[in-house]
Length: 252
Image (cartoon, rainbow, N blue to C red; front, side, top):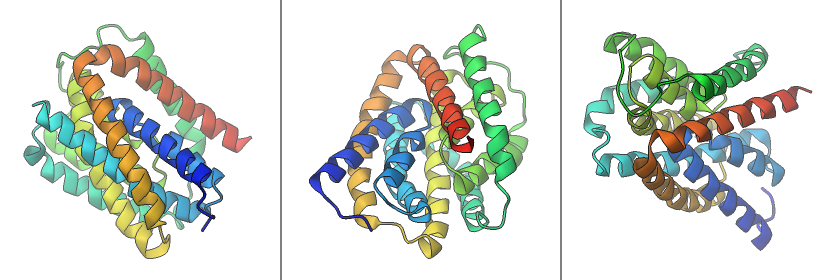
């Protein structure tokens, strides 16, 4: 465990606040916190586990904030949340036995495609559109796929949930963002439970960052609720592109 200094605490809290704000709007908060945890000298396995601790606070806060504004019915989502949680746990359990190199090669391409989709496609707004996948198929395929990714790798899972809701379930951008957060929380918790058994998360650091995540998530959810797609779309483009560039940089 790294020596906890005032400078380190401020760095981690600042990263968690920024991640909570960004993640509540467009997902991708792990893009900010995971590199900072590793920069602090935390071994990769512990950094992944600790990232799950603090990320769960932000996702839960955002879910509650959107529900309080009437943008999502959390009780109607418990079935999907359970599926996401189990998939997240499965991804974390299999992290040492599933080859992720190929996935890391594909992900930058997918993320850049997502950024281009939201940047260039006309007509993406807060209005619902035609559903392209039946609810049972969405629950059986889209949700566990993203949940598994969340447990296996993590950063960007919120963005992938949101894309699924927009492109497959036909939700408007703001509604998709609101519905993403409980699933993101569930797969985060599922991954955390699995990581806690083997990754030994640093609970003190995770809980401190979680407090900052709560504040950032509240402000982010409020901003998204007021502005809607006009804020969510550009931020999603930026976070998807940044995550793609980070993955490319890691491979160089």
